[in-house]
Length: 189
Image (cartoon, rainbow, N blue to C red; front, side):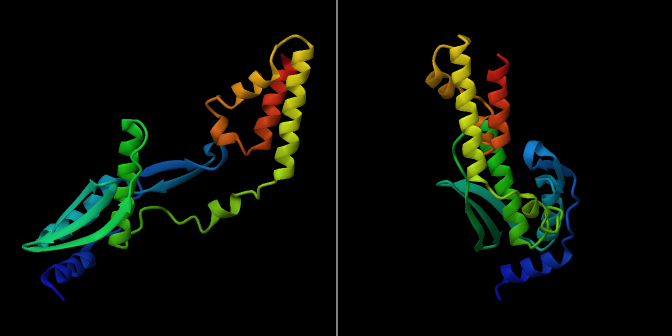
């Protein structure tokens, strides 16, 4: 082993799991709450042992790849490299970078950055029912046509196009209940 890999091994032995101080929400409408380690807490868990062993850790983005690099003297070791999306506004970009940094560090040093839900998130996923979705979309089309017949709206195709421009459309485009709710809006108009 090299001096750098020996130092990394010795530092890892001293690392503690970071506290899970962050709270996130997942699932439909964010109903499932989970805890995770903040990037700052992950860094507090790994940086002191690395520094005690003379290891400098850096993370930077180069050509759309986040690189996690360990350095000690003349030795350099790329510990992790992962793609980071470069689209979106500055806040979305910063969020993607923070997420990637946290996951890279947890992966490299084999520390847990999230609570184990014992498969709960995966088991909560409902199987997709394309037949139910198709029926809900037909229900919406009928509601729009009814609104046209009542003179509430004048263009059924324009109304359908407008629905796809709603801010919540992307997250609900596979949700039959959402289409039924939108249909009700046209029924009530």
